[in-house]
Image 1: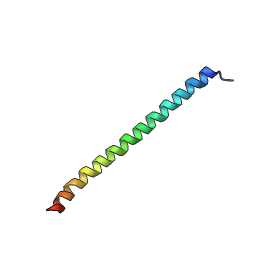
Image 2: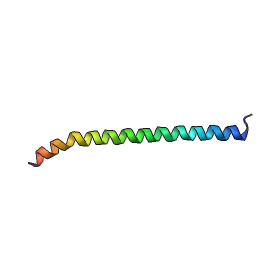
Image 3: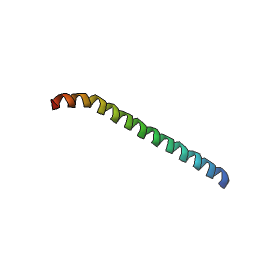
Image 4: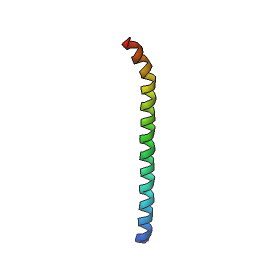
Length: 49
């Protein structure tokens, strides 16, 4: 049986792993949104003329 200390360490590592995955996903979504905005901005500027 695992001791409480080992369970705590494994839980903390799992938490850090999940945190890193969430941060990576949010950064990827933000980068995609900025890329779409950059692609859409010239078209919107031309339509405004």
